[in-house]
Image (tube, rainbow, N blue to C red; front, top):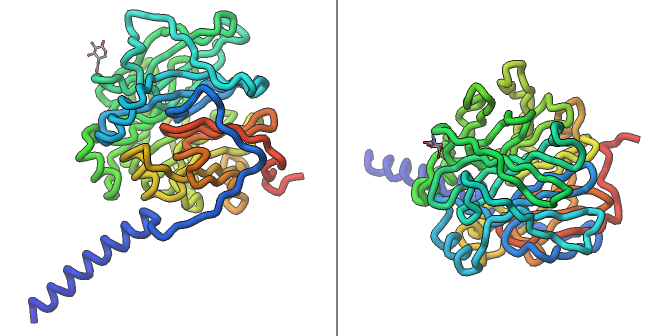
Length: 378
Ligand SMILES: *[C@@H]1O[C@H](CO)[C@@H](O)[C@H](O)[C@H]1NC(C)=O
């Protein structure tokens, strides 16, 4: 009697775990390809364009060559096989025919380009130096070292990057993205707790909320939102009053209202994204977010396990109203099975072109035939 009941219980638990994984990993998902116009690969970038920041003038700074210790041995081997170097590329929406060009980084004693593995990026205008100068903050999974955030100055006059300083702290685990609120002040996402491949697999698949959002300023590092399951891209609204965080491992995005002490108050959870959003970009006028996403989770995981395996790409348009996402107006601008671009992680629109970046694959640009919906506004 007892043994029969325990068999049923064990079967029930196994079935629940199987069902959880089956649905969470999207084993049964299939979507059809659609492009918003002519799309093509941008020359110059072959191994990653994970995150980008775009100036009002349409200059895109793109991080390329991401890797971190918790990635799989086959992911590391792929980078070695392809001789991938961590770089920041520049793409000019006004001169797409030039392709993407790697920006030269001036050597500095505090920064070794050989150990540069860039990930999230955030930018502000450099007020002190004036027009054409930008301060870039970039997450660096230093090869053989600890995660830190690098600060560079880009000057359009010299067309290069000057390394200024770095930020490090024992609270930084596996960082992912940053959102700069002012000079040397930013939010950062602590994506994973474990930096080992073995333990981070459990962290990926089991609902272990070991990630967090941090705030960094002259006072130090404060954990402002604890217990998130894999917070990824973070982006501020145009007025910097709201912060949008992608939490792909729980399939949602969160909208926070910034408090006076830079704390974050959760005002909206959007389960309707129904995909694994990687990074957001604010549209130039700030009325919507664009998201690079991984629509079929198990294929994204296989792609991360071994980049030779292609994963689908999707770009979403999420209209905003009073800081919140208008969920019923979310639309998909782009879907690809992974042939043109695999594992899309970020996107931006400028000069009627859609630029799409990927974790460790191509950079793609599309001519837009139709403008994305304006959330029903006239
Ligand atoms: C930050 O970097 C400095 C200089 O390399 C180093 O001395 C310090 O131990 C680092 N701090 C942490 C928390 O890693």
